Each structure stands twice: as structure tokens, then as C-alpha cells.
Image 1 (cartoon, rainbow, N blue to C red):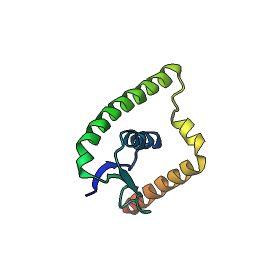
Image 2 (cartoon, rainbow, N blue to C red):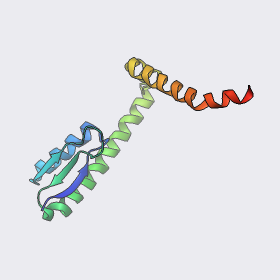
Image 3 (cartoon, helix red, strand yellow):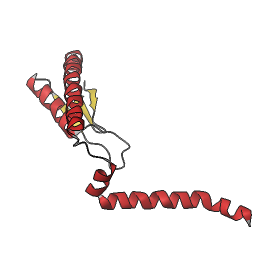
Image 4 (cartoon, helix red, strand yellow):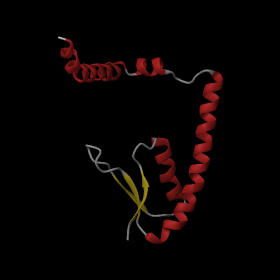
Length: 121
């Protein structure tokens, strides 16, 4: 019987691909289900055989320890070189998205605070 193994929601593609390769290298049968369009159900990696769960779990724990250590080392290297992107870099990379988010924040603030404006009059 199939068993849930790895939730792919908010997982970087590099990590997800590493998990897929890990399972393939160790001949563990798996399949993936996509997430829903509205984000209600998460994308998931499933193991086809429940008997593989313990072995796959041990392999995944080791993989994630290595992946986390590498990601932290990469982050520290970027930080040490001064190449870590800041808020302005992220805004410049996606100006339309940043503008839409800012407009939504301002609209929400206006709608939230407008009723209090009429108290003084």
C-alpha cells in the first residue's frame, strides 16, 4: 500500500530533485501527486511500498542533514562576499509583483482605518 513520504509544499526545486534522485539511486519505487490549483492539497512524494518507509526515512534524514549543511554554507559564503540579495534587490527583480503587493497593503490599511476617520467629525 502506498504511503505519504515527503511533502513538496514550499520545498525548493533543488531539494525536491535531490530527494527524487536519492530514491531512484536506492531503487525505492515512488510517485508524485501535484498540488491543487488553489493550494488546498499539497504536492507530495509517495512510496509505493510501505516496507520501504523505514529505509527511505533513514536515507532522507541523512540527505537533509547534508543538504541543510550545504545550504547554510552557501548562505554564509554569499554573506561573507557581500553578495546576499537585500530587500531592494528582491524588489528590483520583480517590480510588478512588488507594486501589486504594496498597493494591496495600502488598500487594506485604508479600508481598515477609514471607519476611524469619521469619529472625529
